[in-house]
Image 1 (cartoon, rainbow over the protein chains, first blue to last red):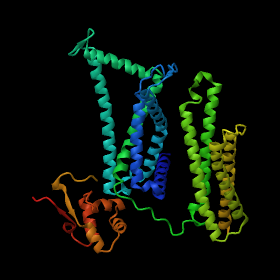
Image 2 (cartoon, one colour):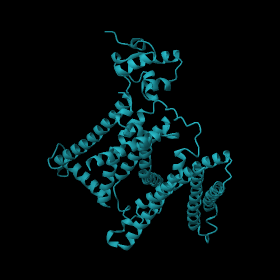
Image 3 (cartoon, helix red, strand yellow):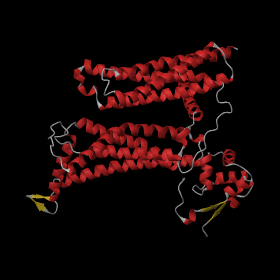
Image 4 (tube, chains in turn yellow, cyan):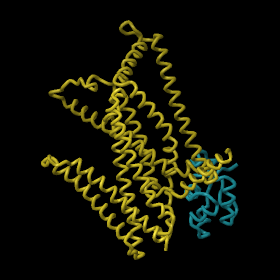
Length: 388
Length: 77
């Protein structure tokens, strides 16, 4: 039993190593400039998100906003700046998460492989990045704790200077207290959840940021592609259709979970309205739509490569023809979707009777079976060729 | 560590690139022979990483020369 467990763990470890070595980062992920851009994005948006959390909740934020009838120029500029700041802060979490995952994918070889697969410089750099990351988080934690300890002490013990019957230090802590209460007054749980999530993000991403920045000094050469990349007999091609269905399953699973959460929110009001149309739902929709576009592009690119190879091989089988037909149909639907977006931007105001959202979802969801059928027939081509 | 040496006494004059070109080897080929990543070779040649003694010996063996021909200390004792 114990030996079986050890074998299973060893097999999992080996499979992970093989997966990392077999799928090295490609394209922009090995570009030094792109890695540095990801680092800059992760840092900048973390700061933006953090800074936005420090804006006190005024009555205006709570929906009791005083209407400004004749705003001054300064007020207009302030509103514009606040709007930009709020938009950036809203976009920050998904950008931070995507940057982190791309950095992780880009640096996975160094951070996830055991020492025997790395050279001495890579081991030293990896250890340096994780050690520095730990030290930074440790110092931030200590700094915040020390500052709060000092503030709580000077809030009780009067320091030099005196105003309105109170010492300056006591007054300062009182005002700071009012400010902190205003930060958490809207929703204390959400405020602390955001702060802790941000700290967790920093702890997770900081070593990757350091490592990626350092590893960007020298451009890495693109991995050497095999001489004949698309061959019907290679195991890589056998996995193509399977990979597609895994990706589509993830896409549909996220949709089902998202809808289920919304239903849960409606059916069980005691859980609270936070489940319904929360900012998290919008992030989920963005991420889901982005993932859908990624799957579509990935699938189109790979199936085109494969089908071109079939044409080169002069495959006239029915499966190859049907795979081509469904591939073309998927591309036509993709173009129809783009055309619909253009139409929404230009015609939606005039033609309000058209169900634009329904049209988008109709086209988008009909792409899935079309593309799936194309991959099913690709799978059949594989089978018929292996039978030969 | 892959950092730029901060003190003069740590700095090395580096002739790896010269010897590699003399042997008509690509950076990738040399990296494969001595068992390091391509990027590590670039860092060594740029003088941004001082290799360990073991790696320096492997480099010397691969380039058919002596270690002291590949690396020379800038500091005078």
